[in-house]
Length: 66
Image (cartoon, rainbow, N blue to C red; front, side, top):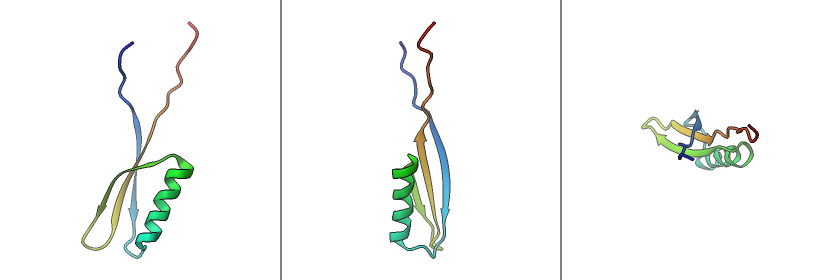
């Protein structure tokens, strides 16, 4: 059996500058806990907006019988 690369589904979320740090943390925590997303990258811009890149593993079912 060969080693296969892990495939991820990615989603970018734009967060408004009016959201508090606590609200952003809660939003990202809920996405991780209830929808299976993990935080891949977070970038904050000078104007206060944030981009969060979320990802989750793609699980593919394999045939077990020939």
